Each structure stands twice: as structure tokens, then as C-alpha cells.
Length: 320
Length: 307
Image (cartoon, rainbow over the protein chains, first blue to last red):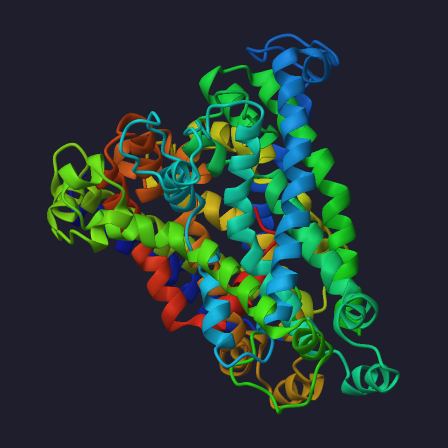
């Protein structure tokens, strides 16, 4: 396809969409009386609802159904695919890695974000300092993975290093290290990438909520002689607890679905695969339909309680 | 994903001591500043390293660390020329694909979501609350769960609809579908805050829903729509999974992220290519970030649970 052809496709699609919506809305506006209300309701609600029904609801249910079938989606195998997830050695590694990701990433990203938010609060260059940490949120996880893959680049100790991490090891007089290959720590070095991306999110939310702590509480505590670490521990942290929970759960959700980092940095090799990546590998590389579906359902089961909790906390936060 | 999401305050507030600033002062400034500088350095150095490398000649990139550039500063644009037009990389083509994928994938869901959000907020029809809760609940479905059946629908559509596989439509539609539940929920929350008397007055004057929507709601919703639009734009631009699955590896349909992920596997020692390639894909989000920071932060926070 040539470039003009692609842009042509895009403009035709946008034009068609705008024209159809415009004509339908215009016509709906012309129909008056009781019937008009019905027509207008249908025009407003139906397109989005149909897309959700056919694009999310039906495929979701279908995947649950397929997860009870074999690799080629022919025979029913009961819970065999789920049994595989919990018994096969490869899949247990996947579950273990996923658990490490989901525990380590939210805790460290939130901690770093919180500490940084406190440290730069009211600093002269606060806005600039925030932008530095927030910037990784704007770029793709593929880009972030490339940036870190370059940091982790390995050359034998006696050679010139081009990766910063190994150069630092060399400066410290240590041997160079295969960060992305050496198990089991390679998973941790992948997690560093996610922390690097997510800390900015934690910092932004927590900084705003720190600034919202009422001044009289702080003042009263100060008159009582509370200061420093104790102020942080007994006033700051309890006051922002709801935001802390929202940040932790939000990062957990993002982490459970992490796919791009694993694919770009290691391709899931060297025992670094996680649930969301394994789903992709089983479904689109190994073409094991049943297991892929079961992995997707596992992801759904794990994500659901966190999302529900997250939404409830957020609504509480909004109500305040 | 909350309507009251804290934004980054654009201006510093009055110098009333907050809990944090007190803690901050008492944490004895030298150590506090030191820790802040360490974090800020760790967060910027990796990007700077790759950025510098993208302007160094291939020979230099492969044989010496980017930190040596400061002592022997050789600069070239050859890497960018190579990744954009070189026969093996041709990122210019994928840049075009990214644009062609992104624009409709933002416009379509925002239009449909704004309409639906208006209906859920201000129209009366049977089953409205149930339907809204159902749409809201769809946010918990991870996109992975829907992929294979959705792909089958595109390849073999029901009701004699035309086949969509191998066209941009599969990617546009998928991004639109995945954006809808969150977009409807967020915009609904904003619409609900519009005073009911405004709508009532317009209705008494004989304005229909279409007119109220276009004349009253859209102007009021502009900031919310912009915030979500920016979020969706970056989400689509940075996406890898949706493009990979629904583009089906077809190079004509692949965006920058897919191509870069591939190069990361096949050319993994050619850092002059990878570094320049990474920045070709990063330039758009960075420009958006630097120019629209205010909306950007709001939008990104709003959509943080999506995916």
C-alpha cells in the first residue's frame, strides 16, 4: 500500500463516519413528538452499546467457553487447561513471575513516587522536577524497554562497555553481568522498567493529595511538637491513605496486564514470561487455543477483584 | 478514572506549610535534596544515554559508551536518515501507519461515547440504569480475553457483513471498542454535573435532544473530551498488543511500536538503529507531553486503569 492510498483510506473512513453520524443525527432531530424521543434514544445509545456487546461481551463469554476446549478448539477437555496452568513447570514459572511483578512493582513504584513527592514539595523547581519523573509515562513501553535494554547491554568484562549498568559495575571493580539473561534476577531487572514508568503516576497523584491535606491538621500537629519523620508517618501517610490505595491498585492492574516489556526486552525467554505475555505466546505463536483462552480467563479472574476494589476506593475518594 | 482526579497545580500555592513541606524541612535538607537528585538522575540518565547515542556514528556507538561522547563529541544525522529511509528499516512508512491508525481510533470512540454518555445522563428510557451499569462493568474485561473471538468475527463476520481482516478497519474498530466503556463512564460523570435546569429550560424552549447535545453539551464538554482524547491518542500511539494481534503481522498495517519491537529482536546489536528508531517513535508523545502537559496529566490519570 502506498502512502497516499493509506491516507486516502483514513480520510474515506473518517468522512464516511462523520457523514453517517451527521445524517442520522439530522434525521433524528427532524422526527418530533413521542416517536422522536424513541428514535433519538436509539441513535444515541445503540452504536456504542452494539459495539460493546459484539466486541467485549460476546468475545469475553466465548473465550471462557473456549478455555474448556483443547488446543485446536475441537473437543471439550473440562478443566485440563487450567490444570496445565497450575501443574506444568513452565506455567508455574509464569505464575511465579506474575506474582513477583504484581507484588514488587506497585509497592516500589508507589514508595518512590511518594518519597519524591514529599522531597520536592514546595521546591523552587517543583514543576520541572515533576516533569522529569513523569516523562516516562508518556512514552510507549516498547520505547521504555529499548531505553533500558541499552542500559543493560552486556559485553565481557575486558571489553569496552556500551551499557551504563555494566560500566558502573566495572567502575566498581566488579565483573560485568548479563542482566536480562541470568535467572532468576532478570525478572527483577524487567520490573525496574515498569517501576521507572509507573513512579511518575504515583508521584503525581500523591503529590496532589499531599497538597490537599488541611493546613489546620498540620499546624495542630506542629504545635504539639510533631515534626520530620513522625510528621510523615503520623500525619502525611494516614491523610493520603485513600489515594495511596488507589495508586497501589491502579499500578497492580497495569502490571498484571504487562506484555510489551517482556516481549521487547527478552521475548519471554530465560524464564521471564508472565501471564499476559504467555497468553499471547500460546494463542498466536504456539496456536494452543484452549490454553491461551484459559490464560486470558486467569488474567480476568485475577484482575477483577483489584478493579472492583479500585473503583470502590475511587468513588469514595470522589465523594469526599 | 475519577472526575475529580487531582490535576497537577499549574502554579505554586501560597506558602502555607503543608505536612509534606514540614516533613521535608525537618528531613534535614542536604540528605533530602541528595535523595531527590538521585531519583531524578536515575529517571533521566537512561533516556539521555539513548538520545545521545542516536546522534553518534555507528562505529562510536558500537565500540564505546555514550558517556565518552562528552570527550569525543562526534555528531551525525546518518542514523536518522538510515532508520527513516533505509530499505531494511523504513520507519517513515511505519510512522505513516501510526498516524493512519491513531486518528480514526481516537475520533470514532470519542464521538460514540459522547453520544452514549449523553443518553445515559439525560435521556429517559426503560432499562437505562441497568444498561449503564453493564457498560460500566465492561471495564473489568481485560482486552486479552476478547481478542481471539473478536479476530474470528473480523475474519468471518456474521449477517453477511463484509470481511474486515487485512484492513485498517480491524485495528480502528478494536481500539474504538476497547475505549468505549471507560470513555462513556468518564464523560457521563462530567455530563451529570451540568445543571439540570439548563437542559430543562432548553427543552421547554422546544429544543430536541440533538440540538441540546450539539449546542449546549458539546461546548461544555470540550475540556473533558480533550483530556480523554489526548489519553486515547497516546494509548493508541503507544499500543503494541492490539496492533500486533489485529494487524496480524501485516507490515502494511503495522505501527512504529510493532516494527521497533521486531527490530529489537532482529537487530539487537545495532544500537545506532535502535536508538534513532526509538526516538522517531517517542517524538510524538514527547511533543504532546510538553505542549499539553495540563490536559495530558488529567487524561492519563483518568484512564489509568484501561487496558
